[in-house]
Length: 342
Ligand SMILES: Cc1ncc(C[n+]2csc(CCOP(=O)(O)OP(=O)(O)O)c2C)c(N)n1
Ligand SMILES: [Mg+2]
Image 1 (cartoon, rainbow, N blue to C red):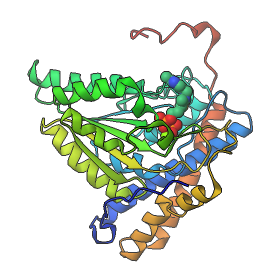
Image 2 (image 1 turned 180 degrees about the vertical axis):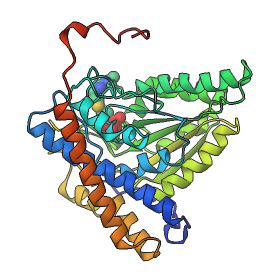
Image 3 (image 1 turned 180 degrees about the horizontal axis):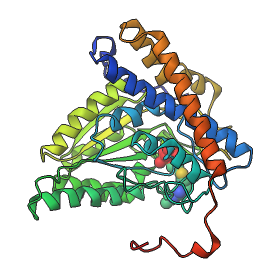
Image 4 (image 1 turned 90 degrees about the vertical axis):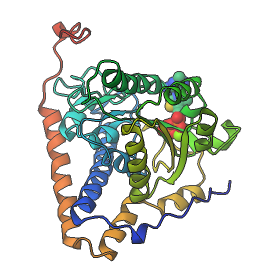
């Protein structure tokens, strides 16, 4: 087994957050986990079709970044997009209905698991092609800056967070977009979720330089590595990067070291990763870690966390019921929503 990377120490136990901030972060991570577990159940019951990629284990990244952003900032995802959508504020019932292919889904049932989209929540999309979201997110960041500086719209100070995987970071679009974003000081966070694997390809077998954050330097960009299993550490690097982006000082490449607790997709028997590696990362579960922090610091009462767990379970059950009861898209509407006027 390849030696795990040693990350810079983050002083989690001494970080101060408020009671309410703690509960928001906890709830968002629990929502992500419970939603994905329910997806697995529904997929195996034949309620969803096609490829479904779950996010279990990586919750601290989505929550740490998204909850440091403003609701009117932009988020761009990949095919592993359910939890990014939830963190962006898309209601669970709309995401579930989309996975069921229903008219009430956030992409009106036309997208499915890999194509979640919500203009209302500034979720620019899930994208099925590896690295496909990177140029789209770069374009969104460009328009924010262009509106503010070329068109004089002072309110156009939005930041874009672009999530993608370690595998995507070896794609040409990554390098082209880092160059442009740095050159034009675009307000964007490139967030690499390095979960060590691209389907069955181990990161160290595919990358000449395995420390992805170092690739920022050649573009004159800030690059930072962070423990992607620690929501407070992720939140801290996000806050710094967001402040820099909003101040017009340009992009940041954030490499979050994380792990997916399930196979690549629900169709993957997950036989390539060693049991020892899986166990090592399971022991670093970001939700368990954050729960201990909240309780040890006496920031919350355990009962409050249990109440959140229960509330989320109810919300997920309601999301499933909503998706089940929602109508299918009508066949005569096949050509709707292709152009913006619809
Ligand atoms: C352009 C392109 N090539 C190949 C694929 C097939 N494919 C789907 S996911 C994936 C691995 C990507 O791994 P990574 O970027 O690390 O993201 P992760 O799945 O680990 O979140 C590949 C090769 C694809 N979807 N798009
Ligand atoms: Mg990966």
